[in-house]
Image (cartoon, rainbow, N blue to C red; front, side, top):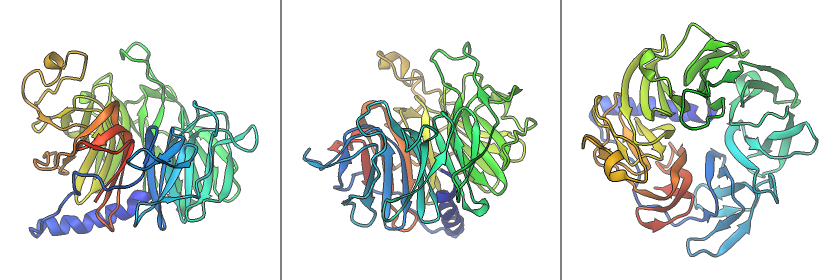
Length: 398
């Protein structure tokens, strides 16, 4: 999810200047626009040209009243200006309920789509580039059987990176795989739930790749939740997150701004800021469920996940969701209710006013895509309502 954030970061820098001058900024409405929706979970959203691309595990686009707009297969496209469905998406994994799209990134005028889906040959699968305006396939990549959990477009170097259990690099012009490196591994005894190793999010920062990962080691060297890699996939084993991160933590999403990295994590469930220079933790805020998506919007951090409570003070303990929320959720009465979405300043201050309520299935928010031009926020996940309004799995806040 790397290159598409570049414009957002540049915009955020301008917004930071406005903040310093006292100008007010606003997050979008908490009520969703009347746009089409989907019939299954959304894992990723990206914008290119006039279109918004949505990926996940779904088979239909529907109107809010439940009428079917179109049959699709794990990818759908909407007009960014009007929100209307655009019939150009490739059908990836049609006819199979086990295939899915995990990530989409922007390479020039194309989208690069990664996940678990078949392709034209036994080796060309799980990773494809399509024209962002027409939807026509540009190139299938010569991938190994590795499923893609994350995708990173790097047009400056002519490459696409795919994150699975290992990091892979591909030549965009030919689709050939260049190498497979930096293999992740997890300790099965640390966490109560089975956690598959792999890179959940990749961010390009100059010549550095930051990888949010489910990992306790990379190539046998200690690593936890967030790792530093170079453009050739070499792991910087000297850069390790602050020991206070917690043994059960695993990284799900990462954003970067100036000298800081902002990590959304599962396992120990939190949002935290770390120094790019040395991995020192600058602040941490507890969440009562994983922080699954972190993006920068309006000079703030927008966070999505399956939390119901979030911390607004460093020492707040938010507990966790369970079958007995009265006991396990916010057990000390310290946290603030935020169901699936929250916003923080870069210094960790919770926005007191912005509180869209997601409801539906357990995971709530998986994907966020801010639009720096219009001020809209695209949200994807497993929700079925936004602020009490029926809007299944995909919503647009204006």
